[in-house]
Length: 252
Image 1 (cartoon, helix red, strand yellow):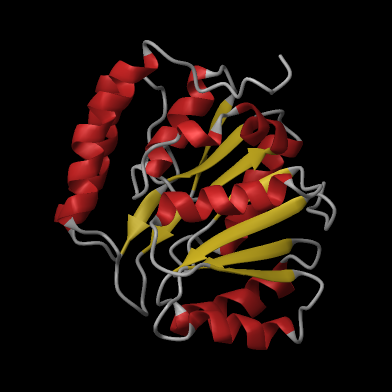
Image 2 (cartoon, rainbow, N blue to C red; image 1 turned 180 degrees about the horizontal axis):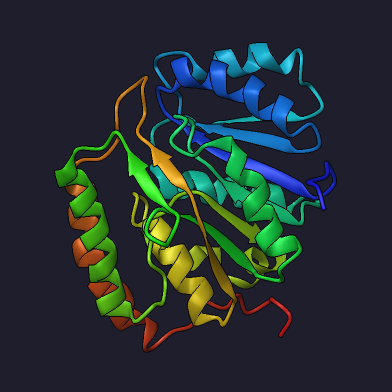
């Protein structure tokens, strides 16, 4: 089964990714001629949005742009993209970075895990057999790996790569999760989305990928993001004992 226009949307959040986005989008849209792409840009000073607009001339019916007024965080960008997708007919909704760290060849593997193998969420995982990381310093690999170990210890969630940002969701997963209850706005958003899906009983598949560190632009990782994740996971786990992530209007 191949990805189709009616079914599949790839959401790419951007902030100062102009150098990457002009290379990524043509490559992505050529490799998968039957998908749509939504770029959610947080008013990048480097003109990322304007570069996307220039590409829309060629890909007018497949490339879409959401321009936001200021930098509001990765989590809110994705949630805005999810809501945009749910107002349309997409059945498979992907998360993907703009910096080539998520090789586009794996998009089909994520899709197949959901569309053919029956999983509800497919995660591009660095930390399962066959996965890995290229061009990261050892200290960063260890920090990322043990962050996932920490999350598993706190949440008991059986996901090896809890902070992964390369994901495919079936539509009904995003319809079932009450997106207004997702509190994290930084990279810990990725943890909370997986945790919400797991708490609601959705089937999750980790697909091995080789993650490649960015070449152009700079990482958005900083100490406040790490602190949000470390403390926020404890709060997330505690609060989940008393409330559900289920959207009250979602069918049961």
